[in-house]
Length: 411
Image 1 (cartoon, one colour):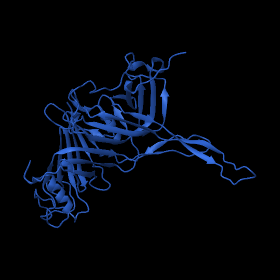
Image 2 (image 1 turned 90 degrees about the vertical axis):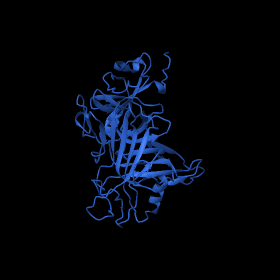
Image 3 (image 1 turned 120 degrees about the vertical axis):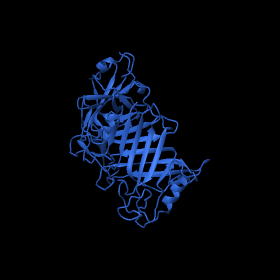
C-alpha cells in the first residue's frame, strides 16, 4: 500500500489565469480557499399516535455556495526595462473592470490599468474610471499544493508527480485592503469568489508571467508613507463643491469655504504624520444560483453591488498650528477642531493622497482619492494621545466613477 501524501501549506504555488495568460502570484502564509454546500432539512412534527410520535427527518443538498478564496501579497512596484508594472497588476486590473489582456503590448481591455504617458515609461496608473459595470472580468485560480517541493517542475505539475492541484472557475476579486503596519512591509489582502472548485489532474504553468518576482528591491516599507489632505474648492481646476467664500469666478488659493456662507471652513491643507491605517476597496459582489428541484444547483455568475472605497488612519494629537510644510497648513489638533465645528456641513469634500514609499532608489504607490468625505476624528487616550479618522472615497457625482487612482512607480 502506497504511503499517503500529506501536503503542507508552505509548499503551495498560486496561479491566476485570464484567457490564455497565466500569472504566478507570490502569496503569503495564511491563504484559504473553500466551497460549501447549501442544505435543506425536512423534519416530521406531529402529535402522538398511540404510544409513538414520529420524529424523523431527511436532508437534501440544494446548491453549491459560491467558492471563496483569500490571500495576501506584498505590494511590489516594478520597473521592467522601461515599463512600470507591478507583481499584483493582474489582480488590480480584474478588480476595476478589465476582462482581457493582450500579451506583448501588456494592454488590458477595458483599460483599467493605463499610464500617464505612452508605454508606461513614467508610471502605471490603476483607475476606477471603467468599473461602473454590472459584472467584472472573470479568471481562474490554481492552487498547486506541493508545487514548490524540490522535485516539482512548473511544466509537469500533476497528481502523479506529487502535487494536488485545485482549480477555481469564474473567479472575481471582491475586496482588497492595504494595511499600514508601521514596522511592516506594505501588504495587500485580497479576497473574492468563484463558481466551482475542483481538482485537476495536471497543470503546465511554465509560461506564467513572473515580472518582478525575482527582484529583492521592489518591496515597500510602510514607515515610508506620507499623507496629504486638502479641502476641495473651485480654483485652479479643483473639484467644485458646495460654495466659495469670495464669490463665483474668483481664484483665491485660500478659498476653502464649503457651505457658501463666505467664511472659510477649513485650512488650505493639513499636514498629518500617520502612525497607522487601512485603505479598503470593496466591489460588494453577489453570486447568483438557480433553485431547481432534484439537482444540486451551481452558481451561474455574479453581479456587482455598490463600489465602496475608504478606510481609516491614526496620527498623534499635535497642537502646533504653525506652518509645518506650507503656508496655511495646520496640524492634527486643528484638523479635529475644524471638522468638529463645521456644523453647517452635512457633507464635506477633501482630496486625500497616501504616498507609500517614494524615497530615493525605491518605488512608490500614490493612492489618490479626490473627493473624500471625512468623519470627525475620535480621540484614543493612550500613552501618547492620538486621533483616529475614518474617510470615504466618493465619486465627484453620484453616478461618477472617479473615486480613486493608484499610481505605481517601479524600481
